[in-house]
Image (tube, rainbow, N blue to C red; front, side, top):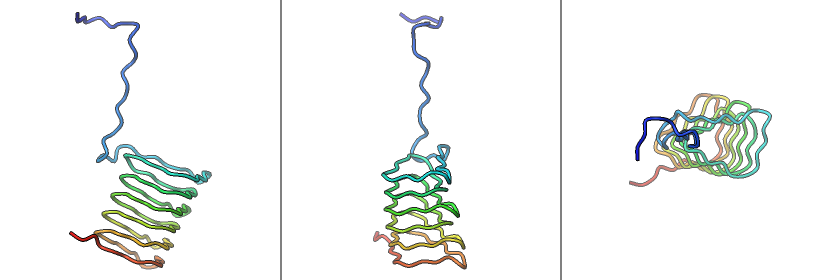
Length: 126
């Protein structure tokens, strides 16, 4: 029933994806990409190009040249570029180069001097 020798007809082992709480899986969307649609990731997403759509991820970084228009749901969000939409996250960081037009629901906020924000900040109840 069990054998120590390898079965040549068996499929190779499949790598399991990183768990939702792990930052080991990181997707970088390059500066030459323009995506329209929904993006979902169990890991982190770094946007260097343009996204027109909703993003759900464990972590999101919008690079200095990155642009996102849509709704974001993530554990942590860091903005260096442009963001237009709605955000729901645990921690929200605006770097000095950020330009944001959004309503943000978050528990923790960091805003560097020079960041531009047009919108509302809401703290979840409870």
